[in-house]
Length: 283
Image (tube, rainbow, N blue to C red; front, side):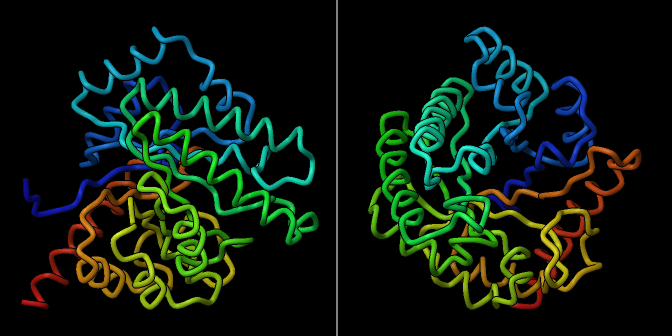
């Protein structure tokens, strides 16, 4: 089935915290098709992975009733329990979190789990050994994912795996259809890397894309679309050239903004406007 536009999804933290039905309705009113579920490193969000089957089914049913999908999970809890950590107890907990996230996704219907490219979040601990342990445990995670038919996708970050090129080295080494890449062009640009050239390395392996704007050396997601340095037209044109047709997830951090709806509407409209512009100009 061909779609004129990609699936537009919104990161959970772009919405004001509320019950899920309210957040789903906010996302729908702003024009989104899906939401990205957050499991970050806080105790509260990690505890979501211990929900009962009934709680998971309630989340799935609520999304269905509000005509919204939960297609992706941002699993940033590994910043705290990293897969390459020098402490074996921390690595073991990271794998427990991975298994729980996969079981959760299988029950709820999440297709893609975004994995962090950090071997360890604290760069003072980063060594060749932490990189080796990270790759070994990512390979274990990919085997777990195969059992659940859920795709893992690594996001290049500002430590360890900096770009799509280096991330693809891990993807190719693991060599599993259940391990792909999940780039954030703005993050790559903030590191001083050309995201247009870098995206090329992910051809055929990009499961989803985080979309936000960028400023040099800034890695947060609070910048309104079109006010930073990212050349959205060039990124969107490159994704079309790569025949990317997966979801575009608007990544913003708006939890403390009273006018969060204005931000997420503007981001969604900006993407549609520039997708149509690029395709019109390229005819």
